[in-house]
Image 1 (cartoon, rainbow, N blue to C red):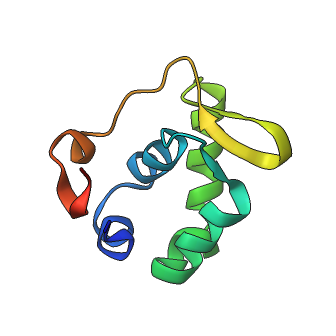
Image 2 (spheres, rainbow, N blue to C red):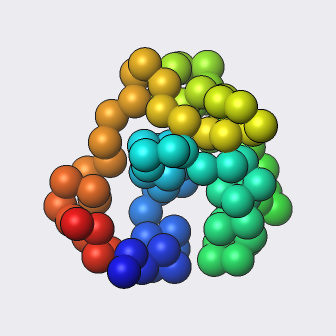
Amino acid sequence: MIDFKAMIEKERVYDVVSFFAGCTKGIGYPQLDNFFVRYRFNVVSNGELSKVFDEMLRDGVVNFGNKMLVIKGPNWKEPKFVTEKKYGIS
């Protein structure tokens, strides 16, 4: 089981968003926001999540699918913590 709490608390916002975008079906933006509200509220309250997400959209790292689904873009790369299989990622 993936330890989302530890991942969100310890990793960069950019890498966490990349991880979720790279999941098979992506993640809904409201769900993504909810993870950060739950485990790292300051990222939402100070606007960092929005800023990083906008940069990632502009750079083609993430894209929007149907119904605000966040999916990987043409310039997406797997975060390092995924290849290291941290937080229970297999």
